[in-house]
Amino acid sequence: MKEVLARYLEIFPGERERLRPLQKFVRDTPEPKQLFHRQNFAGHITASGFVLSADHKKLALVKHKFLNRYLQPGGHVEESDQNVLAAALREILEETDIQSCRHLPYHADPQLPMDIDTHEIPANPKKYEPKHLHHDFRFLFCVESDVEPTGATNGESRWIWRPIEDAIAEDTFKLVLNKLRTAPRRM
Image 1: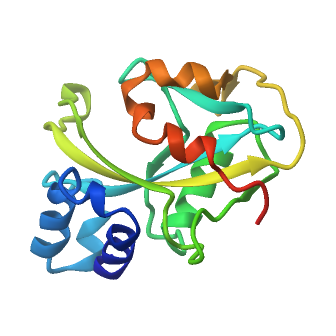
Image 2: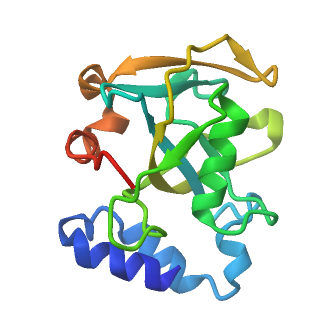
């Protein structure tokens, strides 16, 4: 992860300050598996995907049950995931009806995320979890063909298409909006 973060910051040096908590977390976590462990309340790395519609005008967003707001599909990295990119794709498949989407590498290195966002997750007394940080590695995907949301998926969440331009109103998307506007059209 140190190498991925270093390469990312070479491309986006202006994000160095806002990613200082992630830099410290990676530096201070001696066991690599602990970077992803969901019970590591110093924080952990998560994975998500910005899924564009076929025409690149809409984003697939999932209603987060605990936070009660729409976010890009994503979640925890599991031991069975080959890498963080694979975790993002698995989360998309689990949280939406989208069965056919492709990764749109934003960089020459396809394992490099389009964006990294560090954000606080509030305490969840029902799960006995204190507040902690998620260091979300966010990748870009596009559906192969149009698909309409069918409501709840896996009994957990529901998802919608939302115009990219409307996403500017959401704080979580402001930092990535320009990246989404200039997203590559092909692999």
